[in-house]
Length: 206
Image (tube, rainbow, N blue to C red; front, top):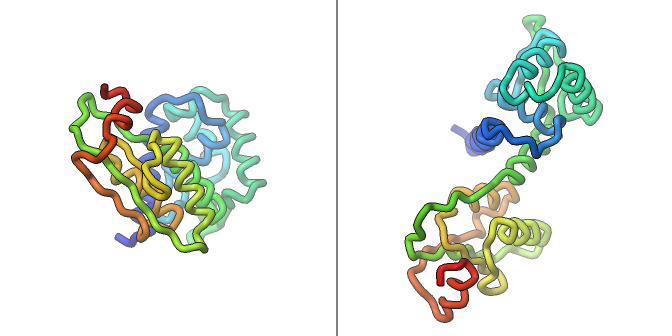
């Protein structure tokens, strides 16, 4: 599987987990776009004879039941106006709804928003140190990465080094690859370090 397709499947899995959780924190626009992606084929194509069919399918799904058909239809119209989806007539004459490149970019942003690190019941006594040295051209990516690490609960260990007590490789590399800086990021697992008590106190291990 190509790297792009793997990443696409990975964030679709995150969307499934998000919607299966029965969340109510997302707007209907976000939920509808995600629902279209989840119901898609590998090329991010949602097969539907018309918008009405898509509305029907979403309204009958578990995550669509909290909205009525009019709300879902209005959300789809809004998504179309934003050029996040488009209607295409296939060679076989079928009318399909495709998620555009702009829509796919928005979905990737949603995936980053949904990233969470699962905390085990017991700490294994090891620390995860995320370090990165990004070229100047990635200044924006550097700021985004720092912001996300902080949001996930990491604390800054040094200028470009952040520390966390739980396994987080998959989540951090997903974020780093999204910002296209994965090759500059390293994750170390360490048993101890100087001034460890200060960090333990921060995470309530003392």
